[in-house]
Image (cartoon, rainbow, N blue to C red):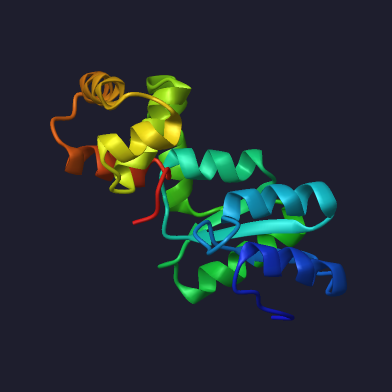
Length: 179
């Protein structure tokens, strides 16, 4: 290990002084999230290879990480020898995906939030999952509370969910809010 960063912004600043061959990052970080950081690393330093070490193993997270420039992905509970294997593989071949991640990628992908909901519905769902009331959401988005209630009902119908707790779990699973 050459250096360590606590968040995405610190990681990007560190890359200016330390010029590594490989960066290992998480998806969940304070401030700038890992997906955004990967994209920034890829655009500013395309020669740097990025490996994701994360607890998130859904196809959506893996695909988003790869789309932003990650060339490797493994789980945080991977044994130490797999971490070494991932580093060697990325340096030798340019990529590495753990068996568990590769298996998930071969399964049919779950629809993304954007496939299931409109942009406005995603906005409202995110605010609901943050614990805001219909009145607070209405004020923030310049809508009436009744309009927010209608959106919430349509979101629940579209996702086939029955309560706010289920909506919140869905929002966390899709990465709209952090648990």
